[in-house]
Length: 380
Ligand SMILES: Cc1ncc(COP(=O)(O)O)c(C=O)c1O
Image (cartoon, rainbow, N blue to C red; front, side):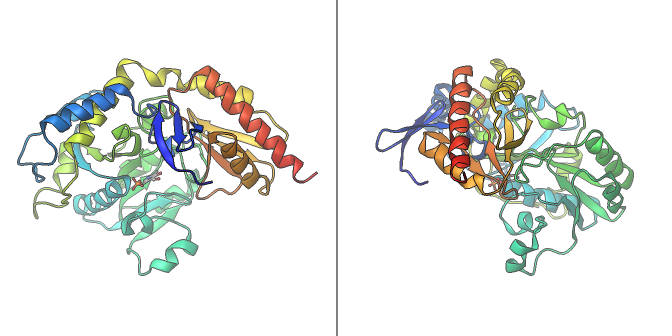
């Protein structure tokens, strides 16, 4: 359903007719702190008054870049101590693929079935659905897939594999959680074969799963961590985080292994830094697991098959595919924003800003249950 956006504030997006929509999408896991948080807006304005773009190849030290890197790496494993800034999630993937090839001297890259890592040619090559990728051939050589959560498939990772690029919780597959020990066994297999484990935390990062990062929740340490989306608190920015040794592979022989004019844009990083400060100081993600439980308690309906979630990254699967469109459209008409997944045609996405209040959760669930009554009534 189309509407023209007038403005957005906190949990709500307003159209030009004055109608308010409760945001249960966060613009696909971006607006985790809600819309236009005053501290983020103030930080952006302060940076605008100092400088915008200056220079790109690291010649200039830019305070927002340094400040964010220091703040972030304090909360990561000591091996994740360097960051290369880019602009988007897809660009993170491009850098990660190049980095893996350069660092290991291998070219095979493995990703999970039904994963979405972005829409540039490298990122798209990681997709397993040939219905889509066959229109853009030839693709990138050396891409293979493993079935997410299938431990036997881990044997496809060998001494020939440069990297496994994988999400700790599959987002566009419809919030597919890692089975017990899956990520641990994946980590082990990568270490044994000298393969880089590259975790795409572009959706799961910055508190979405109830922990700062999902790999901390599931107790593994990746070789490379990819971040974007909510990183910029509403502004476009991404980062490839790794050790100095691994990231260093990209800066020598040849130098400038990846160039990006606007990567690490100071205004975006001022927003990101203020957002991260807020997230950490106010412990915003501490309440996420309680909020997740509240959604589960409220979302009971005869056409719900199951609710899958990791924190406030949720998928509501319906008993029949035919109900989905009715639920999504009725919910949006009723003033709450939900969305479809790319690879799951029975579930809808719930990923509200982490600041959602108890009363807003009640209201969201009231609208959703009413939408499900409506969807059911269409087939009585
Ligand atoms: C898990 C994951 N990785 C990567 C991307 C690509 O990010 P971007 O759209 O910023 O290029 C997305 C976007 O939806 C994503 O969900």
